[in-house]
Amino acid sequence: MKKILLVFALSTSVLGFAQKGKMGVQFNAGAHLLSEAGTGLCFNTALTYNFVPSFGLKLDGGLDLVGNDNLNRLGLQLNLNVVALANKDAKFGLELHGGAALLNNGNFLFNDTYLLRGDDMVAIMAGITPSYRISDHVRILLDATYMPKLYKIDGSITKYMNATVGVAYNF
Image (cartoon, rainbow, N blue to C red; front, side):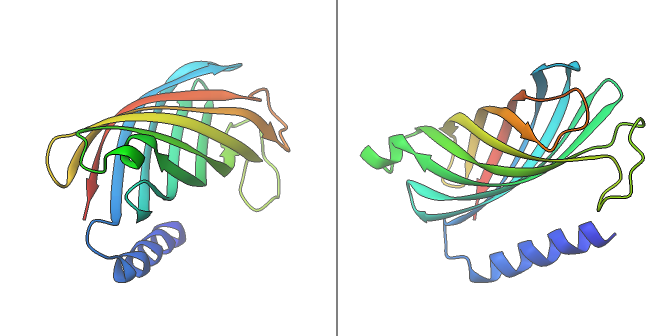
């Protein structure tokens, strides 16, 4: 419940300061790939804020279901739309993003007394997102995000990639 209230408070405060077209939300679903635990499903969502049409921040959260592992992620990334640098009205977009994330592996094998139950980790992440704008507010996304290194890990997953399809809405 506390997590839900925190997300609600953050999104409400950010939306209160948002200007037209600068704030957005994303919803994605896809596959968890290239990890030692195998393949699985992933779901993520993000709040985005663009300072200019080509540059912004992305606060994202995700859930990866891989075998007995449940990876929960909260990350902050810088976002650069390289197509918008040349043409802000283009229908196609290509975003490069990178940043850091906090992760928790909710595997039943871990029963520790840290802040969260399970294996707590810090990760660096980078990705690429081609998109197609279907209206002034709505875009279709393909996203590939790679986490090449997980720090402070106790489990077997040391790296992984998410490949997702989703939709983005800009206010």
